[in-house]
Image 1: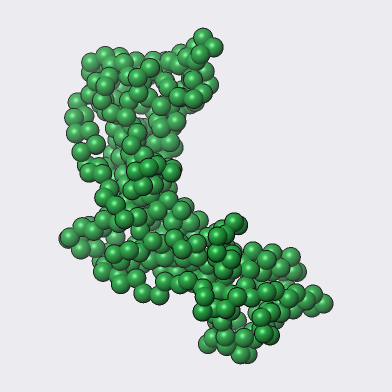
Image 2: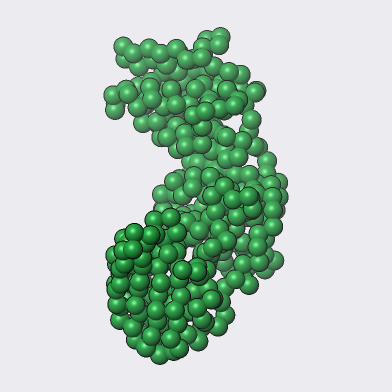
Length: 365
């Protein structure tokens, strides 16, 4: 292998894939990136056996070839060189030589044949969606994913394709977030896949919110193609809960509040909540909501908020962090809350839209 490239041309694909390279590896080759040079471009691949990223860039290829080298070391070398540097890379035996100006580096390599890659995912379905729409879907749902839950199917995000929409659902058993975005190429028959947490966070990082992308769904993998980058993630093999049953259908006791004022009142009241359980009590009366919190030090906080409400008086407790996360994902000036009684879950959404819904389970205080 022998190639020449500008610093920026090499740096961009390395930065795109380095997120999946773990610092502590059980397999030494997983600390490496796979470099494949041919036909005037270089493809850089990184994987942790769960998520695989491939990024390409145009370079001058004098001699094609493939090899694996330590990913972070090569990235650090490229970063440390001057902005306008020209870099020449050549392989000699088991070493990779990196030269630029008066700088010269020699890196150890491992055979490309040993690098685990996912070539074909046997995609059964593909949908086209804008980067903006997929980014919005992930932003509005990812925070409700579980972390290291024994119910492994909750440690990810459900993607469900329909005829005209792509739906994202995340839940940790205490709260749920759901968001729909319009897509092209969907089929009437819905398909569900669960993308693991790391894959979701890595995909969020990659999206630059410009242009289109294609999502391919296989039986064991999901693949996303965007400009110059191919993202592949294993799927979680499990059955996602029947989330529709969790979403409250009775919205008779619905109230409307100013989202910003409600969020600020929650943040202030939460200062004196129990640091471990983060419980906050809401007392909902006609056109008034009283927020209360107390902690083991016998400290108390109370705040009143004007709302639009004409239903029964309700007293209910919630984890304040869950309410704040949902309010942070809602964009409208006003927010609608629907609660049946003091023991039922709360549904939050934008007053004029049904695209995104947030369900928060109550807690005993």
